[in-house]
Length: 373
View 1 (cartoon, helix red, strand yellow):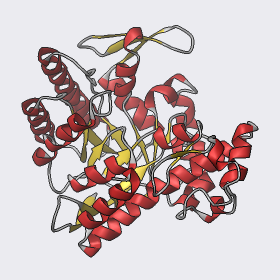
View 2 (tube, one colour):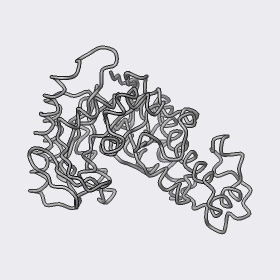
View 3 (cartoon, one colour):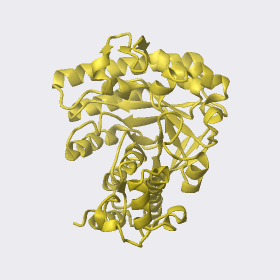
View 4 (tube, helix red, strand yellow):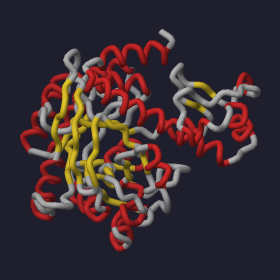
């Protein structure tokens, strides 16, 4: 399923290849987020133009609307959304964290109030696996609890124990219902938790590795903690994960963060940020982010960035600012396209730098320019 192709001599960065049911994914890779089965404002053809190798779908939201049974009847999420390349689905665990005012965690699972109609729902490890199997994603994430930041150590310890027990139940469901090998097999990733405590991160990683999954994610990051705590969570997890399995840092990050994580041995990333900030006018450039709404761009004839995709580079900053201020949907589409192109291009450049053996030089040079350090 995964092979490491090359390692950088001066860091933990590496390139790899994942062979999934719907295609091959080259790592390191950024994965655009399609919460409702669609990456906001963009057509699937545009995602292909961008070189998106794999996208995400949100188990919680798709379960509530339109429902996993309907999606299965329509050919799974690939057929329903007409996306022919790989898809990763989350487990719903992050929504457990983000909907804290609407839910109650028990040993059985999570009882919560449906945010659409107020009805009472129950999401369990087994149910999460069942929903993701119906969606037909290439990679399904295990059901976990994401502890808040900050939290007491005892809470983090209890939460971690809960996540491990749920992981065992996910494993039992997978063993009973899913083929162990063969074309079209769904892969499953465990999620390392443990908040800010190094020994809890190590314990979580070791327990998940003992259970045996196709890959491992590092969860509980980018939940409000300082950036240095985020990096420490990665550093306290990666050494205890197998070298021959992909590693996925969930829900981050900025361009510099992604390069820092690659240098720490992480292979996969996702975040809603590039399209979310685009819808508010923020643009990634090699010289750092800009806000296209600002007056300074009113008469700026340049493209958004010197590395802009031809699909966007044909338009000036002045024109895109006008579209944004006029409330034209094209502005949101162009900025979303650009920001995703920026991050996908960044991971492609990182892969090339690792292959050339100069990743650290590339990383440091990019971050200095981006942050104007």
